[in-house]
Length: 317
Image 1: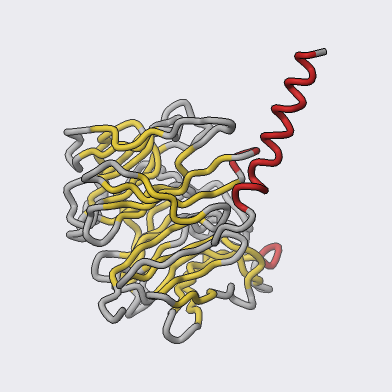
Image 2 (image 1 turned 45 degrees about the vertical axis):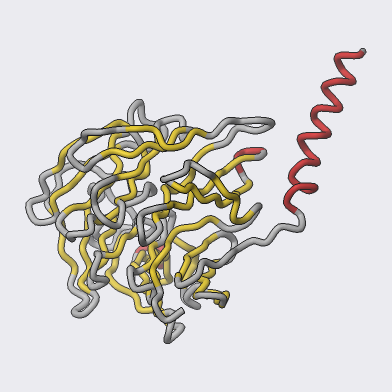
């Protein structure tokens, strides 16, 4: 009987903790001189002290399952969408959407198999977007073609395929090197026996495996790639050549399982990064935290709110 009472009390504490701890917490935050990108049930950018909502396109059926990206200048957002297309099988097509924060409008690029546009990343100069997608073949809604890496030229709308023979996981973070020559991606999803970090030459398509892990994120100066291990409880740094791997932070579960989610978001000065701490029942609660790489100090920036996906320097703020 005492054991049952103890279990009931423990369950009550676990169920009540999220309400008590997060009910009055702010959902998004700002950083001086910065533009931040958040996404959850609603998508926001914060520009300096302003909080701006980013509405989905009116023609969208739903958002893509890949991760969104913020341009280095903090002026654009990229994400995949599933749209109506009456000329296609099942009236669906996938596109890459690019949103202008200044104009508050979307532009759509490409025509891909339904639901097949994956995570996006802007080039360092903001002129191109890399993303995963399955090209259309006839009028099929879905086909057996492999996922391929696409490069979108924003000025011309031209799409170019990177000749990488491997299959980069569509829902993991994709990250461009600061010199614009390489992409860091993840091979193998969370259901696969192993997940690996690959560095891909954009011109040749040649790939080099540098570590086992998930959700790579290239540092602004280019000397580190942050990633998580398979458990998603350790965040590590490694040089792009595969040397110098080290653990920067470990999540320690208390009442719930905790995991890093969606890859870290570097500060423009490379001294800090933001990360999404997913926990609670089914890891449904997102707390955004900041790690100071010099001191190792972790600060909670928001609780029970949308996840963080981008951080750009904004000199006007």
